[in-house]
Length: 355
Image (cartoon, rainbow, N blue to C red; front, side, top):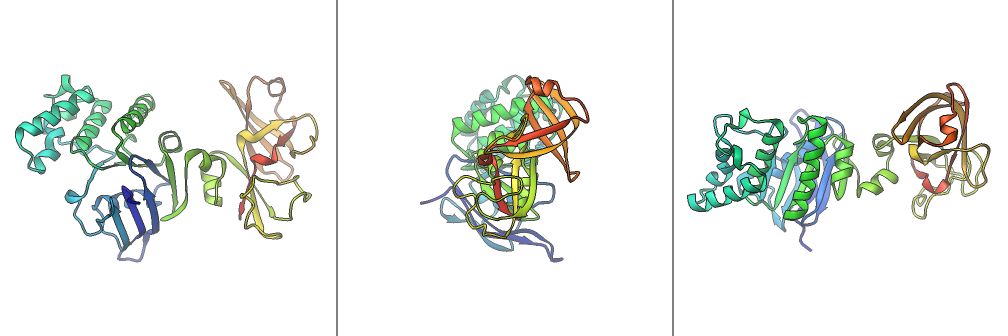
């Protein structure tokens, strides 16, 4: 089966020995929206540039539609790239900016103008087509960058944190437009971001990276609910991580750390283990409840934001954990600072991973 994009053991090592990306393997289906997520310096943008051909790879292969593109120059690849700063030409108007890629390809003027007119209409840029790009708003410049990237009809669109310069409200609007556009066009999107909400809300799959290494590749819900490594458990969402040793089903301690079938596989008895508990998995209980994991502590902070109550609870070992509960529950409304709190957790919401 041919994939739109396939990375086979792709790596990048700089002359000074610094490893930017190590043995990256990935297969992307046609029309898939894949996000690269991780902290600054994790290698996500370097990987994107290697896919685009702007960065040489040290080892491995980049395949597109079954063809080896490892040594193919950027302009010959079936890709288009949108940068965080949009990289628009300030001396050109909107129409000229959008047409630039077609001019580079040497497209005849009549065909070029037809494609540009169509894409300007799609992005509602007709009214500003003759204005200089640097005189427009951030949202308009972002749409120009998207139009310029899509007018060349790439098989794969590469986006390097394209929404980073927008304010929060405009960012949400463009996020919605971006996902609708991708579904409508059916183009494969590879999207680099450091914002979890973007990666989890927009993509079909998320690639989490740390220090040049792929930590996990999963659909957003699976990534959020079932992290596979300590880094992902700490980086995604707001989880409580409890260290311990796997002692078998029904073992004492915090309670029965049963997980769904498959999550405990490979963690032998006596091995160092992390129990990962999402903040929203907790509920306040009046006393020990059969079948639940019970944690007891003291309330140190409470913030009610809309329908969600954000609590900080200090456990007996002085560990501070984050808890998210329904703000309108009477037991939440009644909490006072310094009050004792008993928390219950359904064991099925706990993920066990190697420490």
